[in-house]
Length: 151
Image (cartoon, rainbow, N blue to C red; front, top):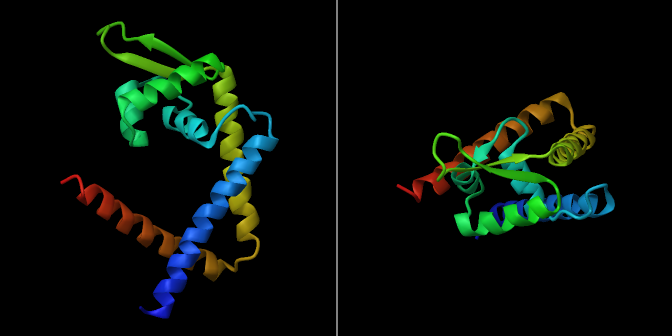
């Protein structure tokens, strides 16, 4: 196999693992140490503004309704989410963030921005632009593979 491909694969795996470890460490050391990464990502999927249906949230996260229901139940008990039924169709269940959930969302968002800012301090403008182009191509390619598998 091409040595460059092996090295690129190794670096992609390391970057992914490192970001997850840093994120996990940050959560456990912070104000919201009662949350897991999965729970933070559930909070992110629900978003700051308005309510999302359980179906919308499960599709965005790529998980089953049953898995989401378990996660939502835990987050409600912890005070991060609220659940309500739609006024127009009682079969539809909506979830939205509580004030505590919104604060967790904002702090986690700031963590990501601060991490990227710290990383980018070591990059020249040309390197930043090249990285952005490369990541955009990588992201598009991965989405094509993922979305292409559903067709």
